[in-house]
Image (cartoon, rainbow, N blue to C red; front, side, top):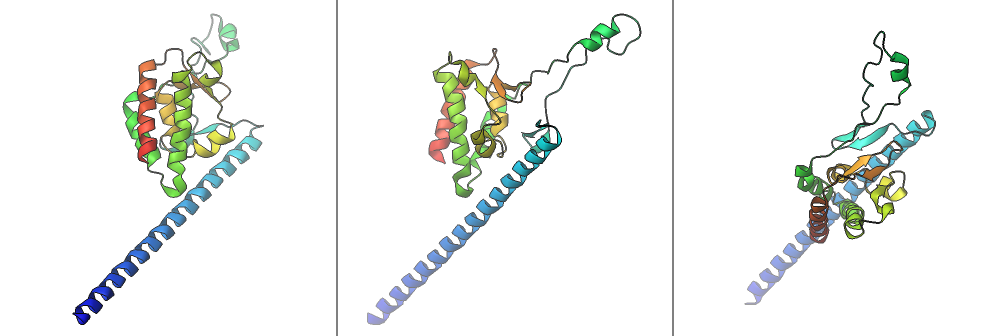
Length: 209
């Protein structure tokens, strides 16, 4: 019995040691992933800063659904511009209007899943919390004008929302559109039911993170 007891104790110690080793490896892996993600964010912010300096304070790039892409804001050319005859000068004098960018509501679950996949350092959960604040504010206080605009130059947005794939796309999908100053503004024709539904989904994602 003493022999069996010693063997069982040894086996238990081996199992505990292996468990500690696995936990240590997992912590190391998460730490390395967090470090890589932090460096990626720093590099992107540095690119933004350099671009802004080169373009007199203007930033012509945004983070799209597939990564760092050129700005998705498109401009419609005035009808008849450049054509011979007619009121060509008058057409040329008109300022182009930015096309209203609308997202795909059907992909909201996909966007939330993408954001939730950022596990290093709890970045995904922090991003979901900010998205929940943006969406929750317009749902709970629809008459508050200040909540209809997401300031993209805000430090919170730049560090906790912009770097993560799916975050900006979700805001566009629920009704926010890029404005001429680069901010995201809630459209008048936004779907209030969709906003409420998205708020509930974000709450569940935050709790399940």
